[in-house]
Image (cartoon, rainbow, N blue to C red):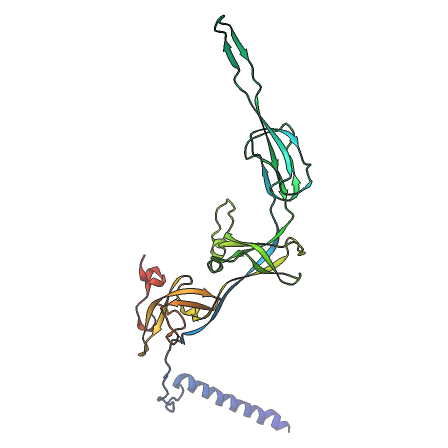
Length: 339
């Protein structure tokens, strides 16, 4: 047993290591035998651009905007006459109704004296006249809580801010992407609102869609690229909400039933006019202008240029793809198209 451990086992290990080393040397310097490889196996696949058949369907242009609850801004009370504040008709902090008198402004305008000459004696008589007095009552423009920092006997000019009325009402306000603002052209005046963690969805009124507010500072190009407008909608009385609460606003801006529709991925352009690539019977394709209608974010209505049954490319073709020249109308690399 001692001979086996000391002599035989070490000898076997040495032989195995020698065989492995010899095999590695052969592979490294002689290479593998590829004579048995089947050279008949050649790639036969081809790149085929996906197509889609034009069909009819229903498109509902519903835009959902993430928003938050905000307190409506206080409305400024402005002087409507140049003069002196003669009376304060409401107290600072008072709750007022729309049209409530807030203060009076008194304006005194001097008048030239009346001069008379006696025709017989030549005596001149001068009669002083009292100033012409105009009194204007300034009223609250809306109902709410009045802030009145103006003092009695204070001199004001037309348009000066003499107070503010905080209406105490709430609105939901959200920002719009350029795509959403295009889809909300001609939007209705109401929308469905859902408050995060709040009551059941409800309709809000006075929907307003406008440009993004200006801060008066240098424009932030990063923000401008993603935000182009705002949407604001008044929360009706009786709905419990709090400033800062998150919300979503769903605005339905039209529905079109049984119309020609295609995927938005197949159309170059998003509003009014666009282009699609129609596939011919021989497999070639050509660009065709089309009219665009409503979109739901996935499909778009085609108002002219296509009929149901036409076949188009599912995706806008890559410039220069399939051996075709670059289509510079797609505004691709200036180095290729120039400019």
